[in-house]
Amino acid sequence: MTNRPVGVLVMSYGTPKSMDHIEAYYTHIRRGHPPTPEQLAELTARYEAIVGGVFPLRENTDRQAAGVQAQLDREHPGAYKVYQGLKHAEPFIEDGVKAMAADGIREAVGIVLAPHYSVMSVGSYIKRAREAAEAEGIQMAFVESYHLHPKLIEAIAVRLRSALARFGGPDEQRSVKVLFSAHSLPERILSMGDPYVDQLLATSRAAAEAAGVADWEFTWQSAGRTNEPWLGPDILDTLDRLAKEGVKAVLSAPIGFVSDHLEVLYDLDIEAKQFAAERGIRFERIDMLNDDPLYMETLAELAAEAAAGLPVGKRG
Image (cartoon, rainbow, N blue to C red):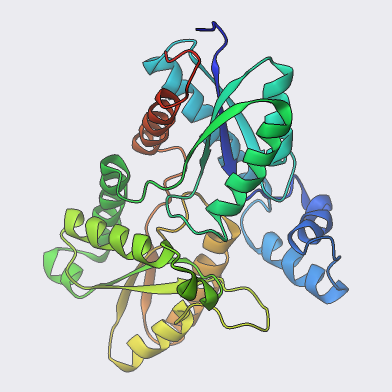
């Protein structure tokens, strides 16, 4: 046994530190290929359109990492130390692992701020963290998914009920169509046996049941602009169809995201909301999890469970 704490690498997509870092961020996403001036201008305009630019997005991620640390400290004082690793911005995933090594940590857990596993999303985070950990001689276990964790479902259900109340009483709420959504991925994952779609549908069903929602469906959003086909239908296409079917009220529940990202604050709150309004649909959205206590408890429990499976080290 060792007195060193177990490291917890909290991983997420990342966002620019400031407006000046947008080009470097976009270049990293594009695998080192700088965006065209037009692409850079479009992305910059999206950040400028949301309240406060990029800064609230970075602050959300920081608060989540701090929240996991605080919850672990309450449950297991001194047993865990949380580090942050981002996919496309500093501190990168590799930076987080190096920081662990510099602190003398030899056992660690990796968890992604995304409940649903895909080899193209969570899988890519884990691959980078595992390679970095092996290079540093750190034994690392990973949480691959947690899409049906009871506290996660409860937290989503609370948000569904709260948001539905904005539409009025029980009669008005029954006329609201709930649209669960997540970031689209290339269609080729379907031929790979990838669990992403099934896990998202399972979360949707569980959350709807917990919140007493009967009228719901799943749709996709924020597809990449590449030549290959992506999973659909897109939420804008779904809204267009619902308008033709006479639906007048929609509640967006982007369960594939756990915090206020650009894909939520712009793609839904600005683009989809305006698109819906033009078709006579009232469009509302549930609050994101961010550093909600139930979500922090979910992550802390998962980290401790994964750490318990490590072959050596302190278990708090």
